[in-house]
Length: 152
Image 1 (cartoon, rainbow, N blue to C red):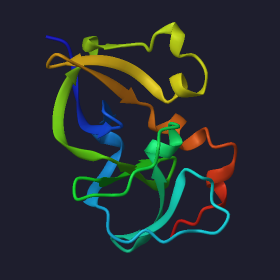
Image 2 (cartoon, rainbow, N blue to C red):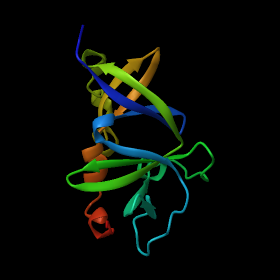
Image 3 (cartoon, helix red, strand yellow):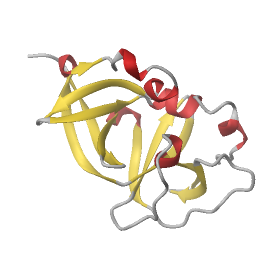
Image 4 (cartoon, helix red, strand yellow):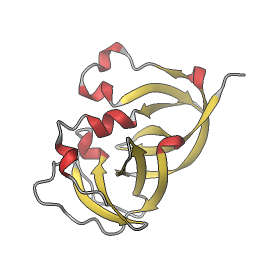
């Protein structure tokens, strides 16, 4: 049997995504998001989460989808990368799955460019296509715009 890693599955604009649970610090309901002046369009603001101020990226806007109001299913997935914590706002998240490493394939060549770089792979899990998020690229491909956001 192939090695497998745990992932958190989440929904965004009708598609299934996964983020490696090793990157996830916590998952919360979305409560108060405080807007930040001159923030990039994909940054909804900052949130106070477990004693820290964390930037909140709206993944719908980050990926070029229409913004929708938060509802009771929306979640904030706080991820860590390079000593930073950032909240990812997603439509819903509730599943944890182990994904065999041999079930993950590289993104197709046709996904070149910015959108393809956000993905580390594509897997088929339980009959559905799941896009595997590359947390480092989502947080780094910001043209320097994330560096101005506070984190305390």
